[in-house]
Structure formats: structure tokens, C-alpha cells
Image (cartoon, rainbow, N blue to C red; front, top):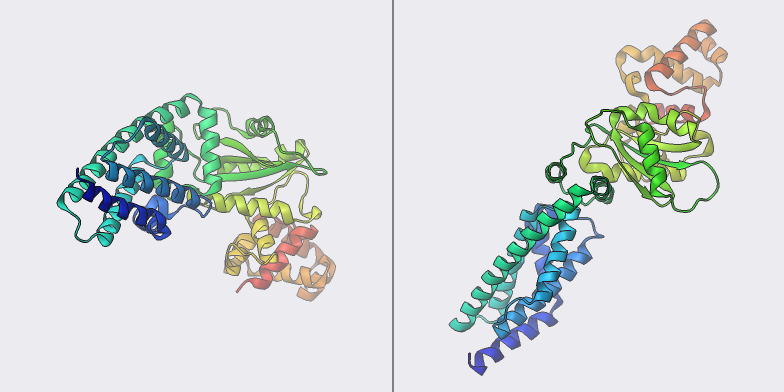
Length: 392
């Protein structure tokens, strides 16, 4: 190679490394063209930008020097691959992201050197093909090794999976299914996401043993559907089969814990379920917690509505709280509920509706049975009142 093409390549390299728009263009293209990356939350984008900046600098250096990836580069690539495998990001998506980045790199070089010498163009093509081939081999090997490690430590693998679900690192149910299949597990669907904490004063971070102990208490022996537990600060977070929500109140009550169980979100929205449950525990008044009962989706949505951060439309919140009471055939129960809330007592409500007081109390018991909400309980009466008020 003569000094002239080296100088031309070096000029392009310096210009591109100094221009932050190049890395931005790479990240933007990957975000737009690779669905898994399009769904990443903002907390993960700085990592993507850092990897793009490192890859840009290394590839341009290899082009200028006609060099090859060094052992330190390969170690870094294997580390990146292991982290992506643990995240559950499919290797095909990761490799596609690198191919998209290589295309952007080529376009940026062409824009800056429209009359690139044939030798420089051939060197660029050779470098990229060699680098992508090496990268593919290293990443595939690292993915396989990470999968083996995760499968060997099933509990840890499930905890990492739940951590990623809570953080919103999965782009789709399909990607989640692929990761579950690699681990040989079946995630609960429908599921219950339970966020729970001991009742009392300020507490230090919860030990993982406490969360797994709660998981064991709620697990159904012989159930093939996997359950998992992790911790967030002073709280346990459990992913359970949907039916476990019915037992959660009794188990938590026996341990002097309180919690919120979300059952109405899909598996690709575990992060939403966690935020709803955690916010509900942060904001619920003391009288919302009763022994033997956990907060539910309806409680969480009402609290979000009261806090000015609704996660659902008002009519959906009303349906969550009122349930079957919204059916036309239950109009008499809605009338009983409205009269009871407005009048303040069963006797007064019965007079308004021209009913015997016992008939009104029977309707209140039916409301309790259908909605799992007792109109005589202050908190549950408030949720019912809000729901019937915002109902279309």
C-alpha cells in the first residue's frame, strides 16, 4: 500500500470519528431496522451507543492499517455476546444489528470520499467481510456457552429472566418464547405478578432468600408452569401462575406482609404490571390493606388515576372495578350500590329504593360476591364510588 491511500483513509477516519452524527446514524438505523432494538427502553440506548462508537473506531482503524481484530477485540465481542444472551436478545437480531451498522459505515465513507480509489474500496469490503465473519463466529460461540451456563443454574437464569421482564428488555412475546425455550421452561400465561413487602417501618433491601421463601409458600406442587422470584429494594417480586392470586392474600397475611397482585397484563407487559404494583404499594393508604387481601389490578389503576398517572382509560378502570355490575342485567345492583354510597347506610338506601332493608343488604352481599369488593369497607367503597362515577 502506498502512503497516498493511507493518508486518504486516515483523513476519512479522523473526520468520521470526530463527527458524533455518525454514531447517531448507526444507532438510529439499528433502532429502525431491527425490531428487538426498536423496543429497547431509554436506559439501554447509552450502551448501544457506546458499542457503536467502539465498533466504529476499531473498524476504521482496521481499514486504515489493513489490520485484523486482536485478541482484546475478540474478548470484548464475547463479553458483549454473553450479556446479550443473558438479556434474551436473539443472536440473529444482534448479528443483524452489526450488519446494519456496517452498511451505515459504508454509506458514511462513500459520502465523505465519493471518488474512493479502487484499492481503498476493496480494502474496506475485505475488512468488513472478515470482521463480520469473525464477529459471527465469536458471538455464536459465546451465546452457546452462556446458554449452557444459564441452563446449568436454572434458578439464577429464571431470576435474570424476571429481572429483564421487569426492566422491559424483551421486545415481543416471540423473543420471550425463544428465551424460555432455550431454558426449557414454560412461563405462566395467564400470570400473576406479585409485589410484596413486610408490614412495618422502613426496611433495608430484602434478602433474596425471603423472596424465594415466599415463592415456595405460593407454589403449587407438581405444577409444570415455572414460577420465579427476584427482589427490588425492600420488596419481593414474584411471577406466578394466574391462579396464585387467589392464595396470595392468605399467604401474605400469615407472614404479616402486604402486596399487590397484577393479573390483567400480557407477558410482554410485565414491566407495566410491575410499575402498577409498585406504585400502588407506594401510594395506597393504610386502610386499603386488609389482612388476607392483596391489592389488585383495579386498586392499582384507581390509585394511578388518583395520582394523575392513569395507565388505562377511565372506562377500562370502571370495568376493572365493577366487573359484572356493568352488565345490563345487573342494573338493580348498580342502583343499590349508588343508593348505598349516596345515602350512607343500608337503611337509608332501602328507603330511597322503596326496599326492605334486608333486601338492600342482600344486594350489597351480591355486589361483594360479584366484584370481590365489600361496599361497607371504606377503601373498597371508595374504589366502587370512583368507578361508578367515571363509568360512561
